[in-house]
Length: 337
Image (cartoon, rainbow, N blue to C red; front, side, top):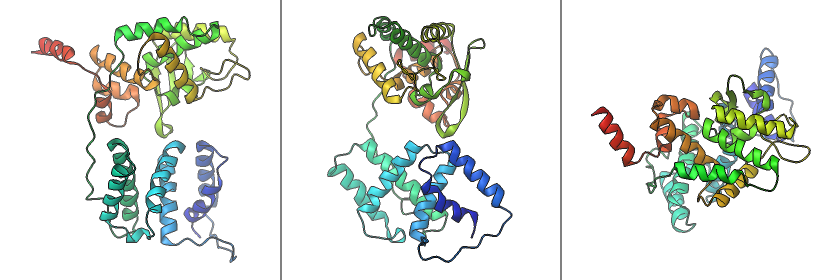
């Protein structure tokens, strides 16, 4: 029996392990047992994998190895399971028309948005392309399915006035000094670094070098990168940590014992409340990320450096984040033309 097959059987049972523990376990397994020949003991209760079951399971194992987060894996699984549940077919029996029918039903009957429908198309295309490449099926039935057109709505960064109002609102947030200092340090950190909500919540005090004004964050796919703090962010962070007496290993934590890691939901709620107090609509952590990217470009940072700052794989993704109006275009034209 090969090690990959063993891993297929072990992987679904590792629900109590985090991503890094699973990766470490796989590395140890392959390293320690690589020089051995393992024979399967005949037993009536061992699961037998046909091509359908093995292809389905191996797809998620492959995605896990590629570094997909648990959240992404669950989303992929939900989409694929929903699709497969609509039909009583083996993977090799699906056709392009099945995909078209499913997407049409999702839009017309289930009333999902074009954005959601295209996300599901992308996941199904990824799934069947992988099955085809790994020869579980004869061809990729999604190859002819085109991208679903989505309405192009310009997503706005915060204006300078909105940022000022948000910072002012932090000073009156809750009737608690610690809550106020945490709020303003979070706002400044988001504006300075452009990091994701999940990255901010996971960062530990030891990941931040206040003297060098740098921080190490772990982005999508457990990829590590450096982000940088301006002088104001450093000052606000120092004030926040002093107020809470360094009572947590996390840079941003709950305000009550045992001062645990802040959840993304808590962060989103906090930012939303600050926005409401500031009378600023659509206030959420991701909009700070867009604002940071836009302000950096306007001040002359190169697109490549903005891409590195945000931790994007593609420049195209970075371009989507930018909110550059005609005023900036006119300025650039006068500057270079």
